[in-house]
Image (cartoon, rainbow, N blue to C red; front, side, top):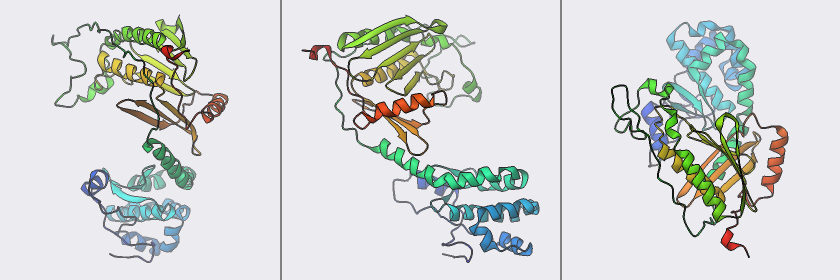
Length: 373
């Protein structure tokens, strides 16, 4: 494998899209993605002809940015631009040693946290020199972002050593009275199965037809609240909210409190310290949610929280991310990210204090009524 006097490692050819896909999806052990690629020699010559030392540019992204910004002729020919993009990507891999090359629609250099489209970055340097400092700040913060991502990944992959506490009698969902909706041509719309065997049309992603199809879920909300009130030791406060919403506060003697805000089009759930969810997540025609799928999600979430299946870990990493997990008898789901821009710093601090007192972030199960002395 070729080497270079400019970059501290072996040079490989540019991976193609098929190879990049194998790196992600293959069950076998694929070859590691390259850190440095060949084909940048034309830019080396360009830099030397302009009086610059390629080795200095390779080791200093700020100097490389300034050089490219001062020499827009680097974009004059496609061959030189391609060589410059490869050189730029290799220089990013020098600055952030964890970064490697892969191919999407065009070559990129990055990690699972961040990725840079090198041809686009090259054009940005020439056309938007004001982006110099934001780019360098991104490079400087990249190692911490990778560490934060690894911490969140570890939380996601951890086995849940939690015993869920369910009532003796399982929840029985009431039958849903589903209204019938039709297309313009008179065909009945089979929500939940519209795109089986194919893909939705592009305009379906921006179209929402019959959001009132979720109204039957209100019956499930009422049944779930009644079931939780009957099965667990919990105070239930029902009231009317804004925009015709039905708001229910469930305050158990132990475990995470829940607030449900339900309308004919969606159901919002807040629980614990920072957990938030809304079903359906999206009402567009492409997502094709139905009242049944929304009822499934609602039932899974509420019953899991009451059973002790809610985990909240905050703050995670320097970015102060929130990791949440819903554990069910069949598995569950988890998510990580920013708690939300609307949450005040004071509330975040209170949440961190509350969650810090829990056992590894797990809220305890609600107390069963039959378990009271």
